[in-house]
Image 1 (spheres, rainbow, N blue to C red):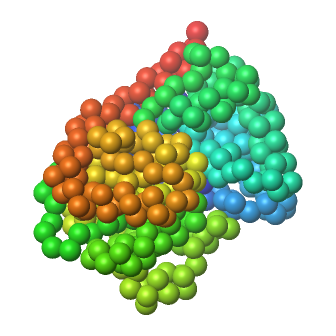
Image 2 (image 1 turned 90 degrees about the horizontal axis):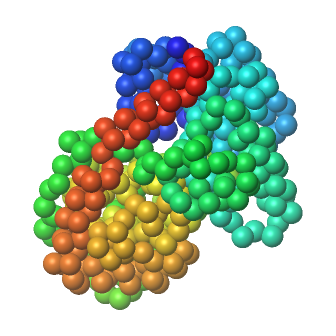
Amino acid sequence: MILLFVVNRNEFFLSHRLPIAIAARDEGYDVHVVTGSDDSHTINSFGLVHHFLPISRSGLNPWLELKTFLFLWSLIRNLKPDLLHLVTIKPVIYGGLIARLNRVPSLVIAISGLGSIFVSNSQMRIARWIRLGIEFIFKVVLRHPNLKVIFQNNNDKETINSLRTLDSTQSVLISGSGILLEDYPFRPEPNGIPVITFASRLLKEKGVNEFVEASRILKNRGINLRFWLLGLPDYGNPSSVQKFDVDLWQKAGLIEYFGFRADISNIFASSNIIVLPSYYGEGLPKVLIEAAACGRAVVTTDSPGCREAILPNVSGILVPIKDAISLADAIEYLIVNQDLRQVMGKAGRHLAEKKFRIENVVELHLKIYSELMKRIKS
């Protein structure tokens, strides 16, 4: 049984899908992984087979897109996977079409957020045409006869269901990618100047500018806080923050920049509040799951994916999107109300234990694989 994952980035596969792939390998699947990063050693070291996919994650150069499509076509045609698991928009579009044309027996589509194109209210003609094109392709792809579509939040599920191509047996709701709770132990908050932490890719839609502006607002109010910014610019995305912006924010004393950090649980243990003011079109942000497991109160936006990652007013606070003043007010409220903040942190840990265990996520995926494979054999 050959299982092929198609994901745009190595990092995303390793952080969000690796435990599923390893469990499938242990179940007897011959697991192959194709990503847009040419770093085979790490993935191969887990007993998986890596293939490099030439892909531009957000570019629209027709020749590069054709190259991506033809490479993936050739790989799938030659490998002949029994089960194709597609993650992120471009792999879903290209891989889904190829699966239909090559009659791949089983197809799993993971909607880990629909991205900014589906949540934007842009009136730009190009944005409208891109969305219409994606919706048309989705209608074709979602007519695969042996299909499961995994959603991380109800908003995405309703958006795709509005295309009227899925029946109730084909869609599954799984709350995020899960985490190994032992890697994110609950620890008491630190003493000293409170630390407010943002950890994500540095994209404008992730709310970076609002985070920095909230810092400016609270400093102007005379509140002594430290704002930690973690993450890297994503130059493959046109909405990436530039490094010189980060340098200017640091020089202005608005943030302390740490770049990418692998020890996120230690960072959160040294923080008091975790903030993600995203309006990106998230699936269910893993950083908010990690924050909950570490027992930290969260301030995030009332937007798809983010709202599902917390219990509003129990483990965190929701604020409107693109509203730095509301964000600053929520942070100040939690700083002033220390006891409430710590109660929220404990509620977050309880939520993580109940809802976000990686073991549960892996088990649900293996069940989906098994169900689809049984249909092939019957």
